[in-house]
Image (cartoon, rainbow, N blue to C red; front, side):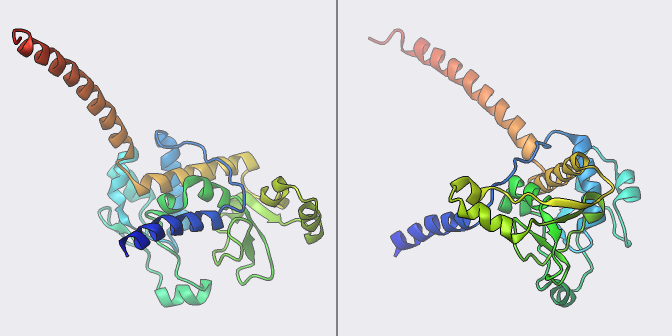
Length: 249
């Protein structure tokens, strides 16, 4: 039984990964050490995501780690009477959320660790108009998603190519055609240019990654110093060992 459980533990995640790998993902720009980018991402998260999604494992005052003062957090990122020491929760009722979206919006504290930054970066840039959906929106990375496109005013409105064009691409039989991302067509511009919107999404995804492990940069820095110490200690131990045994024959 132990062998069976061990095998399942290995196979199930691989199957889950394979099922989500049908669309090529774009690489998310690095934002780990960009404090200005993380601050912009925090602003986007609070203004656009925190209306429906919570981040219950993170407190507002933790954003002091990305260079914000407590007063800046109070003035710019706190709404509806929340306190700076509170966790980032939403007041939306779970029953209402299920009725509106078909499911309760998930907590985003660890979404970057669960999905990956490349998936999030591609997903937030892959919404298109679909009047057949209850929200009026669909997504090429997450088909039939219940989430509306909350950033549409920034990105603008996109449409998916005609089904005939897609069928032609698949009929060619090329492996690249099966896995290439669908190129959406912009039909209405947003407040940001495509390049500016991509940069804004990168900031947002970077903030989501930071929320998943706020101590990530410190952990990496500490790891470097630990390796340096171990290397130095190894030299000291080696020389001490040589000195101790030099008179032993």
